Image 1 (cartoon, rainbow, N blue to C red):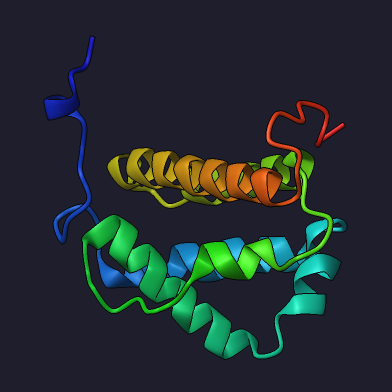
Image 2: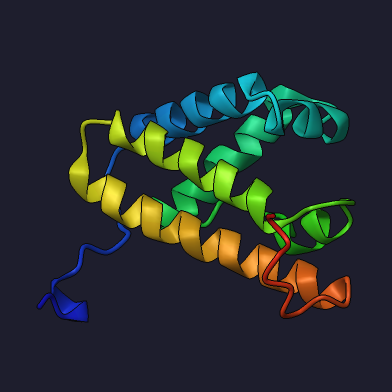
Length: 140
C-alpha cells in the first residue's frame, strides 16, 4: 500500500509550464467541443484567452506550486445556475481523457487527484448553497 509520503506531490519537478499550458488548452478545447458542457461554458465565458490564462495560472499553482493565480473559483461557480453531479462527472471524464494523453504519468496522477478534489469541493459547496447538501440524484 502506498503511503502519503510515497505519493507524488505538486512542485516544479512534477511538470513543466508548457505541460500545464498543453493540459489546460487541450482540456478546454474538449470542453468547448462537448455537446453538454460546451454551451454552458460559452454562455458564461466572455473572453476565452483571458479565461485560459487564468486557468493556466490555477493549474500551475495546483501542479507546480506557483503562486500566480488570483481568483475566486468557488464563488464564481456558486453563481452559475443548474450545476449538478452529472456535469461535474462529465468535466472530470474530459479532464482524465486529457491527462491520459499527456505522456507524464506522474503529472496525470497528481492532476487527476487535484481535479477530483476541485470538482468535489465545488459540487459540495454548490449543493449547500442551493439547499441540497445530500442530493444524491443531482446527476440523474
